[in-house]
Image (tube, rainbow, N blue to C red):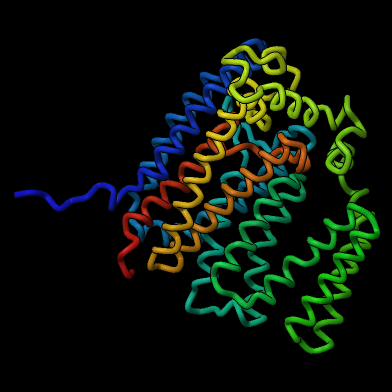
Length: 409
């Protein structure tokens, strides 16, 4: 008798296989980037071990009972807050941010692991029968839960990771079907603040956009005036916030606006990455043959600038292959989220998708010089065990939900 069991109906290889290929490409890039760098001795071996651990974590998450995943939601959030507080007290400062905790020879980034609890708790609050996020009170509770980890990460300070958390929050609010006005209220101050980086003209244009959108939402005059004041305050506080940033963070903003303003300082990585990618041409210079890579012109190129290594040694073809593999993963995750019957599970998948897309977009933008250097790794490729393990755990949860996507729980 022929079995009716269909493995592809329980396990999506179109997500898993591209991710495995990305991990392998990342290992190749890390090997090349550290080959002639004595300060990175052992990085390739460590990442290889972490890759094995991460794949194991993926399958552990895949086989977890769905009931356990829901129960662990509040506990993962509480654990996230504990480790985020701990890193402020006993953490190690790296590149100006107190973002690492060392336990013996092992170090990890709490803000990476806290992403799990953040995605879970926001998805839970947006689907709880006890709360309606379209009501002001429940919406404010949701924002409070979101702000606690975000503020703790700001205290490190790690602006790049804050961008990831805010992006996840915005995507989950939108996907949940919440009133778009609340999304607008949450997002508009950041939009105006970012616009003010580019001068008065950009600030005025941003305020015009905010005003037009307020007219579209047709709220009462008190609400409209309050939101305009909040947005104007966000822009006027820019100078204060800018002075609050550390010198290296100020340099990053200046370099983002004009990379050539400090070609030997904050702009150095961007310019060298662009040179490496551009010199790779169509086919690339070949494995272990990239001048920028092998001479280590980009400091720690095996982390945030791993894409430039691939671009130089494997050229346009290698770079496009990476983009295609990511796009396949993104499209499949979106498809799975749309066909998952349980709203909580669908929101968690969208949270994971947003996490990966935001990392991908910012990191590639950093390497191409169209985004500020904010210390965001490229998922599955950049050196770093914390990021790889967290991403694979979350993908394991997604595959777990995929396995149960047709069930009404």
